[in-house]
Image (tube, rainbow, N blue to C red; front, side, top):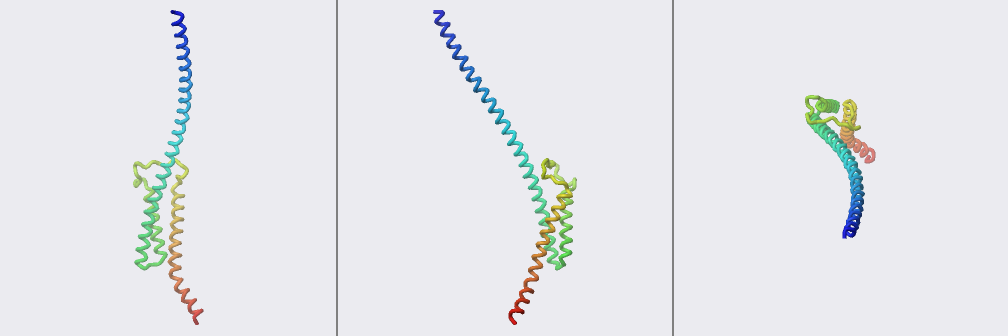
Length: 166
């Protein structure tokens, strides 16, 4: 009786120890997998934070550029209505660009919730202004060339007409 019960309990204990070892090994695999997944989650969160920062920077630049472009359009339309020369239009646009750059850079106009960017795309103010002015002057040059061609093409067409229709 007692030996039989003792042997039965020993077998039951061995089975339970084997189950415990199997579950312990599975638990260890789960811990390792969890650590790997935690590393992946933190990497993804870091990349997401960097992307959000970059998107914020791009949105700020877009807003600033849109404001400057609207100002340039206003200045060009005002100058074209007045009938003044290209030099005064360029001077007006330069004033608008300088004004928008001053608005972007002044401490009192900055949003309190704005946090500085912590990435490579954060350039110093003088570099940003130089790039912005170069792009603005290129755009104004394109507009000026377009206006010049619109003015010259009818005259060139008349000269060609006179040469070939004589």
